[in-house]
Length: 446
Ligand SMILES: C[S@@+](CC[C@H](N)C(=O)[O-])C[C@H]1O[C@@H](n2cnc3c(N)ncnc32)[C@H](O)[C@@H]1O
Ligand code: SF4
Image 1 (cartoon, protein in one colour):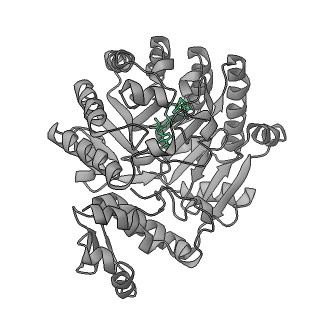
Image 2: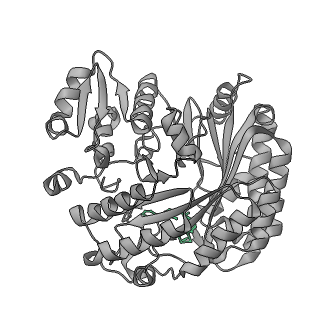
């Protein structure tokens, strides 16, 4: 197995979109983008999801690859909330379908959404929730940093209809925490988990990371044991991605401290075994859930979906992202907001949708996108008649190594192939095959 890890540990996208962001060509024009949203929501049965990005964090965790702004200045809350509400108004005035079609999922991500005070959370969310039609099984979810979350914030969120909470944990081991500038005692995570449950949040998720500095089988075992003790409904076990903007000067760990290749993969396998033994289901790449959780049920019912936010059981035609750097998707295109706060604000001041970049899907993109989505969520996908021979050629080694198989014109991921899902997806990525990236833009696949 170790030689397989050496062979397949190559840069590969995570495929939260296809085409992947580095391969986006040109953004839809303003009118096209509005039209794409309207067309994606034209049927009364169509639904949508909303993502709100809050970029601020009080301190920097030096492993972090998220789009964030580090500040302790809470005077920035109010102007930022105003900007997002302004952006929301711009959409609402042009896409009346956002009022008419059910909103299935509202997610607050970051940065740290609980950087906002209870009052500002309410000021941001109330006008949005009041303007739309919530779906029958509406889900409101938030990513929180347990170190910066209060009971008052949870109460406000619960009152606004939020029912899911995701806690950034990363690792429970003190030394690992110290090296990434994120000291978070077990008791803090335990307190927020308990409080959220007491207040009626029905689903608690933990984010964990494997492959960080000084993580060993022993520290990982400790981390997963403590996780199991608190029994979150869902667990995202992310592969540590060393991204270029994590500057050596900001971190206490050295590259040599990072487990790589088989060493790193063993940390995942150890955690996976422990979680399966504790009754969790492996839902998809890096995701686990209790059998009673809606993600596990969606996996069983073959209704699992995946978008920029990762695996979800809420399949919608539109994911609208508001806030600096947020990404949106429709049936016809992708769209990303300005990534720099000053540019985001400038465009809003001029009453413009703050477009930074995007991509209008070609017919070929749509087919590939659908196949990658199906393969990533179901572990198998029908091949078109002209694809089968190409698949046999492109995936020769993976077929020989028993990681995928082709049967009845279907490409199927085997159990042994699960760690190599991203590698198999490369077959569908026509754009990457045509133009190889000139620099490393994707993290390693394992
Ligand atoms: C926006 S953060 C979570 C919310 C909150 N700011 C916190 O830290 O608790 C989203 C998640 O992305 C994951 N993440 C961030 N940087 C990562 C990296 N370089 N590699 C892998 N996962 C990463 C972490 O698990 C983190 O909890
Ligand atoms: S992990 Fe969360 S709190 Fe830490 S820097 Fe990243 S977004 Fe901010």
